[in-house]
Length: 250
Image 1 (cartoon, helix red, strand yellow):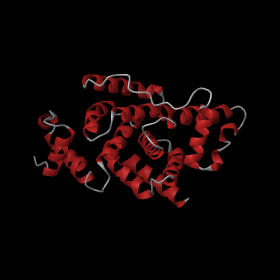
Image 2 (cartoon, helix red, strand yellow):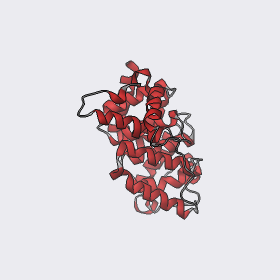
Image 3 (cartoon, helix red, strand yellow):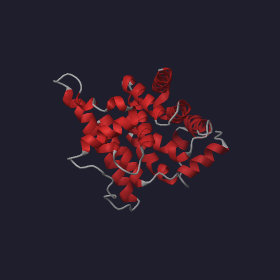
């Protein structure tokens, strides 16, 4: 077995002094996966490790990789992702994945934090109230997508208009208005949620365009896709790349 020195060193940064049992049971697979994910992929571009791990955590939420999420959560903290940032990623996933899919990840996060003696609950990050969340959410939509979103909350057929209202007051008013993560960070984790779960290509294209509008350009999004590919595979990564190209062409 020949695991590269770069891969060994990166693995040690993620998991200090940890030796995986897969080295015993699946040595050929681990040789190829580790050399790819922890050498070839991480050295493909200049994406910083903290951003890389925020994207990986969001991607694992999106693809429902709960066991890998448990493993990578301490690694993310070793690379500087804070407990509050991690909780914000999990919370925001509720709007894009639903409680049915984030429930295990919320439990895992709490278990990992408690094992590391991180006191819960963490400091609150909410900036809105039940009275102003719709207005604040609409402003967040305008800031990210443009002035055309100003009246989106009251648009559409009467029988489904409430869902556009909920997008403003719940998806954006409850989550995007929280502190610790800025709009650029929130849009890139949303991009990861959508890319990883698949079947959301219209929304993924829209959010790729939103990312570009606020400063996460095409080259940056390709870096994000590249770093997440080992965790979601080629089909969903290629779909995400197509959506980025479509958004750029628009």
